[in-house]
Image (cartoon, rainbow, N blue to C red; front, top):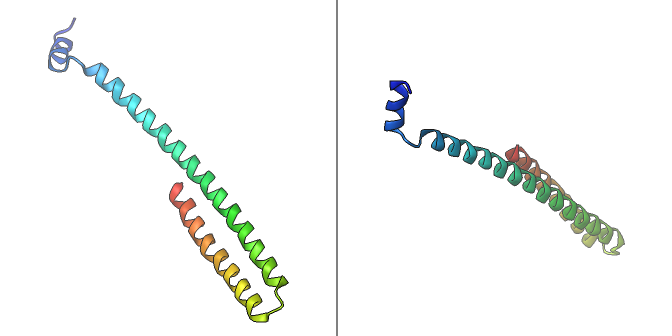
Length: 97
């Protein structure tokens, strides 16, 4: 065994083992981050789908109402929800990238 290898082994007897372990931890962290991103995307999709259903229901209620002010209020609220949720989900999707 060369003298430099013996010196390295004496200074760090776990050298290769530590490097391999660190690499495995990095790989595991990357997998965890990717899984978290996928979960976040799925959650955002479910949030958007649920909110879309809610907005559609509100619009149907607005159309069915015989009171103009109730109809206008429901439509305004549906529009507000659509705009706010669109901004939120866009920002969240951008953060997940």
